[in-house]
Image (cartoon, rainbow, N blue to C red):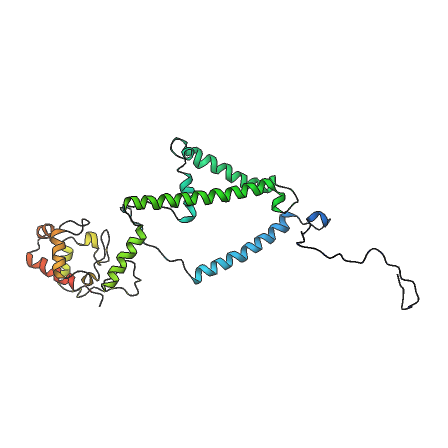
Length: 290
């Protein structure tokens, strides 16, 4: 090894300074190649994982605030459809149909199998303590993960295939498609739709009219509320955009679509006359958005 700037001094090389050229993919060595360079899981490594998680959580919250999830159609308990969960629960939906996960074995299927799976996931870091990081050198954990993914894909496909075949056999359409088609038909006719975005509250037209007292006396407030916004029944604000006077009279006398019975006899029994009922229908027909 040279000392100073004397060029005649003998130079002695220590070790091999040549760097071998790597060929192909270079597999990173595990921590055993760096003695003393590994770090404690708690708190060092765990703290880093938490910080990364916080960054992703903040980003996720920003996305949800900037682009809120759209609200779907309200649930209809009386709808005659085949219920289905969201797509990410389809594999569980199909799993609970299996012979040893339902019926007499429902406790085993719901608590037993899922309990074993959750326990295995919880104990995985303590059971797989090897230093090898390449997945093909960890046959047990890699096999379990691949098997889990294959099971989820298989069960999800089975659930969706069974659902579509049952819908075709019964001649049904999914409820969200039915409601979308109904809304498009109403929109084409210029009628308000239940899924339309309400930007301004519809006011009561001619609120001081005597028909308002007839409305209360006839008992309409029981289902449609005193402010006509609806309680057990639908809102009547803007009803004139959907039905004219004759249609409203028909609804009062004959009921509506099996959802509301005839109300004419109740109105007469409450003290209203035919003229009052006719005026009430005329007043309700005036209840329009504009």
